Amino acid sequence: MKLPQTLLFLLTLLTTIHALALPALLTSNPSAATELFKRKGGGGGGGRGGGGSSSGGRSGGSSSSSSGGKSGSGSGSSGASTRTAPTSNIGGSTRAGSGTPRAFGAGRGYYGGGAQVPYQAGSRSPTRSVAPFLIGGAALGAVAIFPALALYGAYAYNFGGPYRYYNQTSRTNESLPMDCYCGRLSTCGCDANNNTDWLNDIANNGSVAQKLRINGTDTLVVDGSLPNGTTAPGGSDGAAGSLSQQLAESSGLWVVVAGVVYTVCAM
Image (cartoon, rainbow, N blue to C red; front, side, top):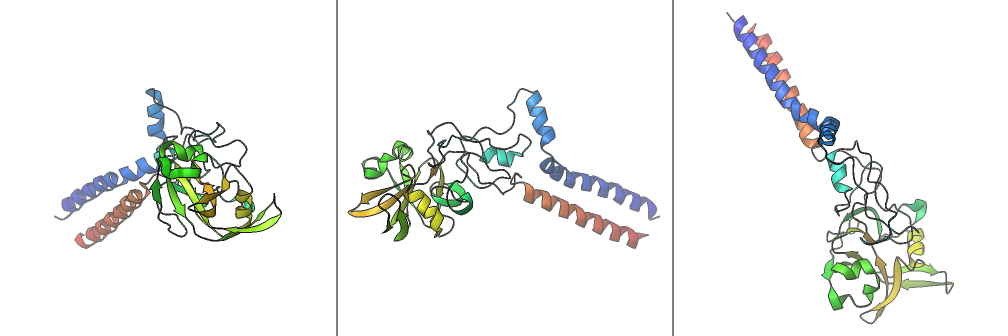
């Protein structure tokens, strides 16, 4: 009699499918867990990012003014709320963005340091993969005019050059090498690019960039620090667990296919 064996296999198959689907359900629908946490007295949605300058000119350090934006909707998953927390310097992108918005260049698509998507200070710059070096104390020299850099030290990104921009004060074109600095514990927006509008914007904004003499050379020094919790818009609020969800779903599909084949052959 093959019928009892078939029924036993189908029961085992259904149990396995439910076990595989459980992680995917938890990942794709975190609202239930979030609501339970709230009922037990936990916090609500994502926190506020650290404030950027209200003028929009300064990329801002961790101690800048308090105009930082909301971190995203409270229904977002734990992945988004982690990146947008005021203690997080991970950066990256979320659906609506958080913290200091991009405010420079064509279409206001760049942060003060030139990046379109922020990242963790100390990492290589996204576009040209420039490796930074850490400086602090007296080594900061003239760069210490930016408070966010002077507090805990900074990562320096040497973007070389020269970079050509229009000086609105002297009404002349200037060409200078450029260095970008990010506070050691901050989110970073340093990423050199050739966008003329971005370069003209920051070069004429004294709260973001200054012409300083570094090692005997006039250099355009840019403060690329961003408040922690800053993310760019246009990404996803999904947690990192989305891959495990896909694996679970695909594994469940293969179990179903195998079960159907086995059942047909056994009958």
